[in-house]
Image (cartoon, rainbow, N blue to C red; front, side, top):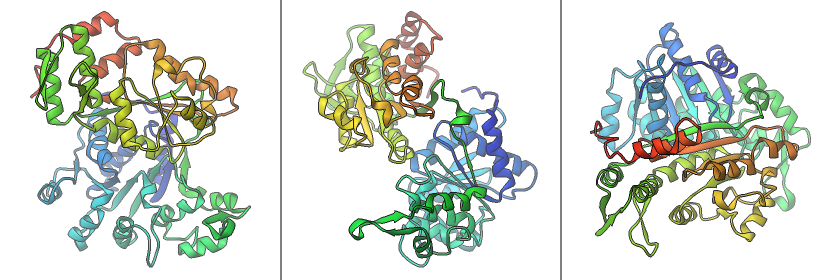
Amino acid sequence: MTPREYLPHPYQVLIGDHEAELARGGVWAAMGTGKTVSTLTTLDGLQFAGELDGPFLVLAPKLVAEKTWPKEAAKWRHLCHMEIQPILGDLGARQRALRNTNAAGFTVNYEQLPWLVETLGDAWPFRFVVADEATRLKSFRLGGGGGRRAKAIAKIAHRKIDRWVNLTGTPSPNGLQDLWGQTWFLDAGERLGRTFGAFEQRWFRQGYNGYGLEPLPFAQEQIEDAVRDLHLTIGPEWLGVDKPVENIIRVELPPKARALYRDMEREMFMALGGHEIEAFSAAARTIKCLQLANGAAYIDDAGNWQEVHDAKLRALESVVEEAGGAPVLVAYHFKSDLARLQRAFPHALNVGTSEGLDRALKGEGRVWLGHPESMGHGVDGLQEHCNTLAIFGHWWALESYQQIVERIGPTRQKQAGKNRPVFVHHIVAADTVDELVVARREGKRSVQDLLLEAMKGSRYDNLC
């Protein structure tokens, strides 16, 4: 991939300034707004200026730590010199990663935090920590309780770490009580109370029949005022609401899935689980390649299929989590996609059914599954509760794609009186026909040209 020139949006400049000026602060901006490249630019500038001595550390969900941060640095010309080393894998792989003295920064998934803190001990080298999807820290409680991972990093958060940035698009997905744990890593309880108990007593009361916590009438305003100086919020006024904010999430096919994909593309044939699968035309080969990109392949003419990988499902989990409880409309194409999505998200609503649509129109559910062909003009009202779309399965038809976007699109949002941006996340299998379909939808290439390129059989001859 040829590195691109970085031309930051005005709000990305604000993100960089905020992170550089505050030793400890947070950025509240949705997925797809460029938080990662903005933060890497800040880190690169601090290292270049000598204000950051040694490597930085990024805490993130596993997929984000493994793929997103290293690839983001490689994507941009001004950052491609930065080596980002994930600390992942088995014990040996993690130990080898820590010995990489050329890395400008390291990434680690939250699950490995207890091991990392214990392993490094007093030799902890990371003076700047970035907590991506910082809501993973919301469960922290001082003096007991809370999550094991947050508790591990809390031991050194204010003793061995000089700078800290929280990144999230949804700081309080379950209510204001989610803010205390995250904010503690920024100010050690100075603004919201030294302990969660103090925070609770000041701004909450027991809910109905003693169930849960309920904020007092003045809590929202006072809590926001208390933490405002720590955080930069990128809202609709910066993003614009006249067209969707589009985000490409590229996922890598695992080696076995890549081998099957190459066999199908080059030979129009592959063997899967004892089944011999053959494509008898270029069009059939394209369809089978799209199925493989999504994670499954049909093994006979009766509609039976077999799963090949879950890379897209894992990426979708991050999108759903980033939405913080707000519904995500997911566009699928094949029946195998629907079955796998329903298995991965057992409580998902199929808005292609009357029952699923009725529940979605009431705002129920976190994941809504829809086929673009069934999401035409008759489906209205989803925009009342949803402004995020994830394209899981890609297809050539531009009109059906436009239809599902418009179900929650900017026009619909305005009709519903919602002054908020619409996010469209394209989950794309890297170096597959997925990328050609997206290029077609963007109007860059003709269908004929793309089909010819996709079916040459030599697209990946230069890959190992």
